[in-house]
Length: 323
Image (tube, rainbow, N blue to C red):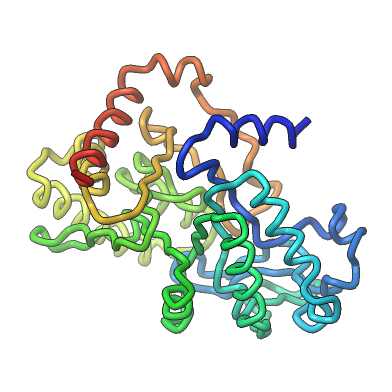
């Protein structure tokens, strides 16, 4: 039934086609690991080391692919994953694209900060992506956010794989250049499913959450709040608006829409000032990750003047930018 519904959506999607996401990993007790156990590493989980985004590191609790074992059958599992998605997708985003080069492994029972990077056969994995992209005439996007070495983005460009641009990560406290422009070879977004919503970013609720989870001390949070205040002031001055989150969001969307990025994606929840995140990285059952229902139904979204107006603003900016 899911395959039939995806096929129907893909048929109606038009150019450039249905946008799907290939996640980085699968549940260790799920079908994939049961079906192809030899392709996965046992006793470890994938994750990320400590960084400024999440100071304790992250354990994503999935079974990583085994970099040597997957080569023994010619990357069969990797090819099947790509083909399965590209059967319906005209655009495919590969999560945590750096994982084609190296992936952070955490031994079972260890803290997220106690892992290490393991190298992968990057050129072979790239080759499979390029082959399936060409066979299916698909547009490939690599999620290159966070702590990503420059050589990864260089290799992506060499293989014509586009990047991600996130406005929240591109804000500066310079009133004359408060928002870095989006590059041409990118998909531009205001935020992602792993970041605070725009309303929470604007108010600083995400900083309060990091204190609550023990990721920031009160002193560090104070400095972060000062930095956020400067960013708000700079954005308002740069766009010539009041220091109002909704007004600045409209300006940011307008700016991204008229910019060079190949595509722009909006988080619908930003359009009704949602503050609760869909996902809090590095957390588990203590947070309602991926379980919180949207405040509006699909019908209510389509009938909302605020939602419709913002989407029309974005469409107009894209049309003006391309003319």
